[in-house]
Length: 389
Image (cartoon, rainbow, N blue to C red; front, side, top):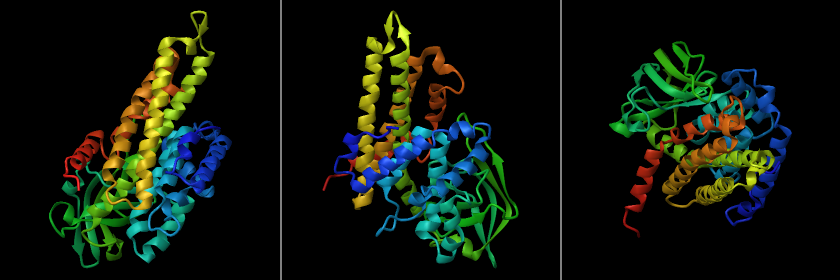
């Protein structure tokens, strides 16, 4: 199965190891194209568990959980290639990979040796599922305004309140939760705490989405956590969260690119086969226009993702704006690509379960999570408005 563009992979942004990884991913996706059909009868939560185990068994989750050799963080170019390939295969397979990486990051990057020993092995092999609980009912992108508190007790912390929009919330065995611990105002008073899902008083309530997945609100009702539940330094949670989200933000652009490549492939196959006005759909001028737009978008998005991922991996000083550009361009643009795919399919693209219909629902969330498109524009404008050195 051909997913990646060799002309992009051969640019200096990537090295031989990445090109080998891309070939391995194409072979793996081709061999596992049956996954969405095989488990279609399961609900999104159970599919999430299955996909986490499959990804762990085949070694893909180690790219998200472990640092790259000689580095302290995962290789972002590898993360992007994996997400591009997995989203080409299936929305929920990519989701399982990405959330496992996000959930593992607080402990993998900042946790104690005991915390890492307790959780990373199971998160890496997919026998445990993690979540990253950030948002609250009244607080989304502005994490500095979070209010749910972890109050100090003689034995550790007491937590009361509600977190929401928690990916994997219904199936996670471990939650990394960002809570107010009171070291200072705003972002200065937040810390990450480790909360096993089995902790008494902690319950998950399912949230149904247009593109089904394991999604939930978490209610903390007099939840007691020990002192050693603190992940990293007290009061450093906001800084930790920003580093995690900045790194994974560019990978969302890679997911959008994978969806776009899948939409383009479906459009090409359909246009070559569909007969219209005595000829093939692909011969029509309006089809040519749409296909050209899709292909140009895919190249532009791939270049923005590659640049940002390369900057993360090579230690560029200020990568936030370029990561935001990659996410903004890719996630906004894929909506038009998918809309054009639906248009080319006509009524067939509206049939429940068809590739265009699935993509139409799946791509919408990309403009919201890990920073809305509006937040990305604020980051970009803030960067370009600063005086150049």
